[in-house]
Length: 384
Image 1 (cartoon, rainbow, N blue to C red):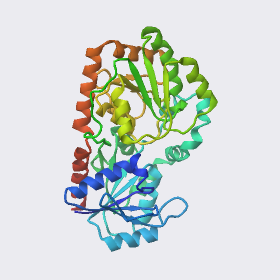
Image 2: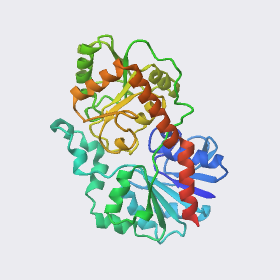
Image 3: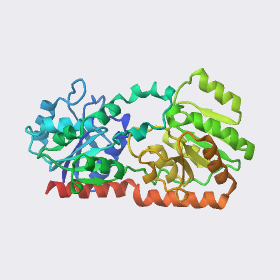
Image 4: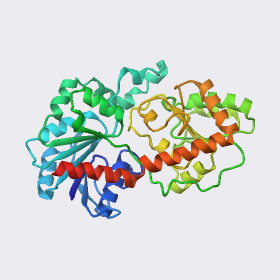
């Protein structure tokens, strides 16, 4: 099958993060399975024109998207059996509509991010709203009238839609898209790389990874850790912050707690695996998550067989089943968060069971090879 993957912003540096990792992993594995796969990006290629033998084709971009004239010419030249157009928001459906009279190829549209509702904003506090400018595109997408999105999707070129969660699939169906038109396929993780090394430390260690940010619940975690220390005095907290520096407010909060190890900067994948492996519990207490439906941090922690505590927001409950494959707590509730952490730190049988279940869940539903095969099935059916 000749597949053309289309994704803005993909290059050899962005493929370590979502949504670009998702696109690249599927293209790479689909190619290994005997398909002719290429990725179209709007990023200039600095060195060679491929990444790990996956060819990259470059199309110039306008202020917000691809130059559609140049893109349509490239598509006609490649003459693919199917196009898999990846995007993070529903706004890109406008570009699908604009392409409808320019190409004859069929398109499967993969939507990575959820569609926001008022419920998603319910956990925000006044200070949090000051950060919403970072997500202007997600908020803009949420207010586009449903009938407009339905119109943009009403093009003969678009034959199927893939979402990364059932939640987003249901919202598209609510916009008037038929159930037969939508399939939910989650994102994945490399289960051969993210697996236990059996090097967990003896001391109870809680691990968080991601930027220090209220929207990610870092403040809730720090408050919870004070309560955890009262129950488990030997507990330590490691923050893999993915940042080169921090503001003084975070530094003061961390400094007052003690027993906190702050690791700055972007770590190599091997280092992340080692840090995860040393943890007793991984805590990811999101307050607001408007980005991709499957947070990579959640998937990686569970793949390591670590009991993971997160929050019941977005599509996370589709990944974590409470007290089965992890723990789910309400957002911005440090008391309940602390109770869950203490329970896992003080009950090895419970912690081991949750960790095993988490690993099994990832192997069965989030292994990249499984996700690639499911995606190829959709693309193959759509190309007929």
